Length: 327
Image 1 (cartoon, rainbow, N blue to C red):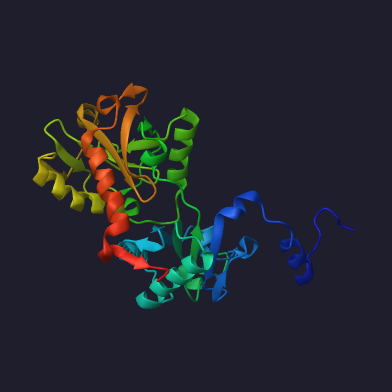
Image 2 (tube, rainbow, N blue to C red; image 1 turned 45 degrees about the vertical axis):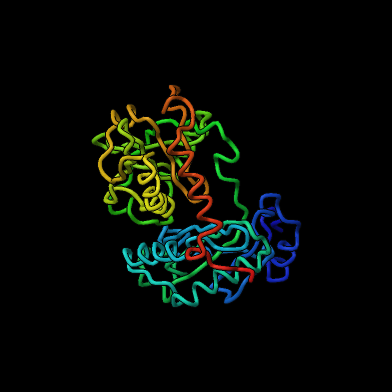
């Protein structure tokens, strides 16, 4: 009898699921699955079919939003980007927009945590272990509410250390779509961990600033102009876009002379008065060390500090961008 690899029936499978959850699973609060047609809060039930092309072909897209004090921040921008990414690979959500929005709210509410992250995964769906998208009769949707972390500058007020990545950047078509194929991104994060720093930053084949593993980068030039890479070569970050909008106030106050998008060479980044990181989790983060050398004067600068406060205030007070989960 094979005791090493037992054949499990439904009862045996259920018994295995009844085992205590792994410690990391305590960070998962709720999952909506279009395959199940409902929400589960037991992390042992948060499963995805092995034949979903999302899993074995990386055929899908995703987005991640944030719930702050019981309200989802800038949710519509995240849903816009999810739908845009899906359209680029001929994939539409199985729910219409109002129902999708309601599913996100219901999942976060079921998770019971007023401060969390929520990841929305749109897959090609189950149907085969082949490669043809036509094998899948219906798209799949998974919405996962899970634990977040404090913004980077809250946890590390001294600023971030970064390293230059050696992982090739994605081609423009794939860089501008938030697909589930994050192997290059994962390798970039590994570089940062191995180097003992916080983030990695990539430059493209012609030496222009690209992005990080899950973050956008930008600079403040010596003449106090906020500049981020053009949208043709990077993923359009929702935090970066919102930060650029909020920067108009800093221009009026005289802290900045202007805001723009365009090519940023390595030399320009090296000469910048500040280098900034933008992301849903880090908010606006100041870079103080790059490849072992001081960056931006070696301490958080005035623009990064002010812009981070503006974004964090926006997350809590901008009623036009907040979707209540708890009334």
